[in-house]
Structure formats: structure tokens, C-alpha cells
Image 1 (cartoon, rainbow, N blue to C red):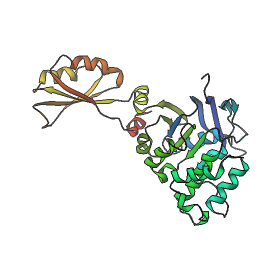
Image 2: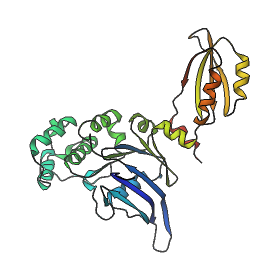
Image 3: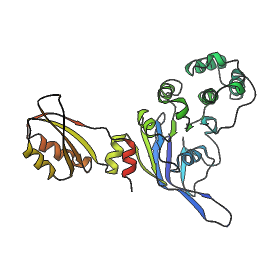
Image 4: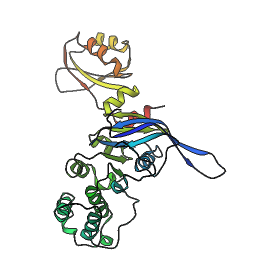
Length: 307
């Protein structure tokens, strides 16, 4: 983890549920790192620890053991990332216009070229026409965008977006990550597997109080040993190949799939995990093979396969 911008070093964390009751464990031995400017989406089922992860990054929750390091400093007790935190549950801003709220924040942070900077950010957010509107009259999504504008103005070392993806949508979040948040370190949480996949950024997968894996969907599937599905189109009807593949190591199922795309046969092959792919490709290379395709693995299937 040398040179990492964000580091979780063997973090254990828990919540106290009462003075006379033991602590409730949330995380067990979490370790990962992010480089400066990295974007990651944090995904897991309900109560998997997504919001807790952000609290540790914000410094509002102190680990029982281990450490959370941001830009060389411990996060705990400092709230170093509070200015970059945006959530649906966030406290409402003062009863003032959008411009007044952003301007007063920018003045407090001594931000240079403030009016021009505010104008640029509001334009990317599609909020330029709301500049003089009172924040109390804005919709939920518009209020979130004001918080996002303030996060963009801030010098927070990391930006933390807690469950706002469902409101903004994938395409708008992609735009923000490639414009006003480009080069900033960003963590986005979501409860939607579809949205987590569609963002096309590394996924940090949480399950049962621990980190399963961080990486692309295919990397996570490989690391977790999730079964894979391959469609192979071969010339003619090859029952000998069908029998051979069904007895091949690692193959769980082989089915004939009806197709009218060409004069041949489509075989849908399910293998135990991606470690069996090379041997399967070798077996298929011995027959007249037209094409082969690995089918995408839904993130939900990966999650369901975990113990």
C-alpha cells in the first residue's frame, strides 16, 4: 500500500447498542487502498456496512483496531472529509439562495476566482437557472446538487456520496465524475446492483461485515469463484462434443441452444469458475469452432453465490 492516498489497514469496527450490552460488530479485518483520483462504487446488500465505511472515512467513527489513513493522516476524530460528504439524510442548508450558500462557503475557504468557479460548477450540474432561487424551494435532487456543488468547491481530500446515485441516475453521475470531480478521489455507495455495474468503475463489494473484493466485475467473479457461462457456436450437430464437454473437468452443464443465426449449433456451457476457462478453450479449439462468447455475470449472481 506504499504511496496510497486512502488506506484501510486491518480495520475492525463495531457499534455500541447499549451500556449493558456488547458491541455489535460491523467490520472484520478490512484492508484496501485507493490511489489519488480513484473512483470506486461501494456495493452490498442492506446492512452490509456501506454507510459505516463512509463514517470511517469521514472520521466520525473510530475503528476498534487498525487504522484509516487519508493522505498520510488518520481520519478518526478529525472529520477531514466532512465537506466532501453528500447524503440523502444530510442536514438542510440555510434559508438562502443557491448562490449565497455557495458564495459564503467559498469565502470561508478562501477560494480564488469564486464567482467564476461557482458559475462553472452550476453549469455542469444544470443548476445555472436556479442560482437565485431559495434553497428551501428546490426539489430533493436540486438540493443534492447544491451539496455536490459545495463538495466540488471544497478541498476535501476525498468525496463521499452516500446513496444519492438512485436520485441522480447513472448517466449524470458519470458526467460529474468526468468533469467537476475528475482527478478527485470519490466513493459512491449504492444499493442497486444494476447501478453499481453501469457506473463502469471499480466495485468495492461488501458482504457480511467484511470486504469480499475490490475490482472489476470480472475480477470479483474470478476472485470469488463464481460460475461462468460461455456460448460456443460450432459447425454442424456434434453430439460427440456434447458428451465430451459434459464430462470435462469443471463443467457443470452443457445445453443446446436453438439458433437460426447460421448453419451450426450453439452450446451454452456453465463452468464452475473462471479457472477452468483455459482448459475449456483448449477442448473447443479441437473442433470446427465458429465463435465463442463469455456471457456477462450479473453482480447479483456473484453476491448470491457468496457463503
